[in-house]
Length: 453
Image (tube, rainbow, N blue to C red; front, top):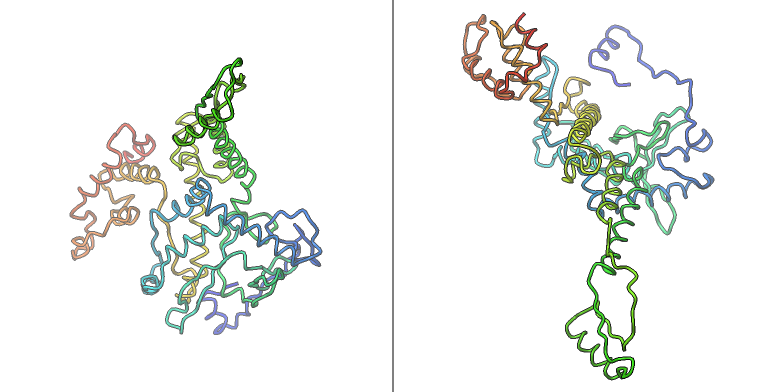
């Protein structure tokens, strides 16, 4: 449990006892027992748990297979990339408590260093969490200027988490393989490691891999595409039969060879030569239903990966309903992204920003809303609330600027009159809000009623 600065001062000066972590009363039982902690892992394993090395090897092989699927599967990679893309696209900012502006500036100075790329670090963490279930990154300390030099992503398959029987982390281990055997490189203090789990599995040590969850549907889609490809090679190109000779006067072997040589020279791979042989065509319809079959497996795969197919550029409501249902799916996905933003922000704020400031909770990461519809709806409500005689009574102009990332009004800050409520560009601010929703009939009725009152 992390103490705040106020708690530490109170304990030292006021004789408050050191806080202790209470002893849990329930134990970890899912996937293993106290005597077999190696079994507690986020990987479905149907064999025996007697050999800990085999468990780790199986996990390493599974993560390797999942990474290969990501690197070689186009639609799969696009589905996975959607998560970090939507989390980070609209940006983020550092927020702080009142009076902690200097600590916020310190965090910004750390993030502005050339060797620190926080966007890339968070992108890698989200990507690893989606592919491997849990992302592992090392927090490298500096000489004491910021307490954190940088955060370095590591291969998740090389780490193992040791828990006690109550589910508390004892240590991390980095493991390598030599001659088919596992070897612990070193034991790691949990304090130097940053782990990110986006999709937890109840009672398990590691998080859920999206590729692992969608593995069966990914394989079905792959099998379907390969089958269609083979069918196109076999039935998709028109074929010709060169009938040489007649039943009364069949062609000689030399005639057949000469004709075959001529066909070879013109690269007609689907033509064949016979000697007055009658061939009955068994498949005259060609390839039918290929698009429908491909759509089904692709839709199931996207669903298993948790991504609406519209995010892949496949069209609104294609095969799974109307454009209205498509919009519902996309809004639900944006809500999921907002939740993931909270998880990522909390993880990096607690593990990185708190170390830089030395005051837990004083500075944190705030992601901007990933959905443009939410921004437009917010602008609509604020415009309605500011339509009365005193626009600043409910929504002050400075607060509105902060909500939408609009730079502060420098002219208003320079004025000496503290009673002044309306900044010089009040009209411009209200015009900007109204522009977000130019149709007054689309304004929420409740908001209009509240503004009028």
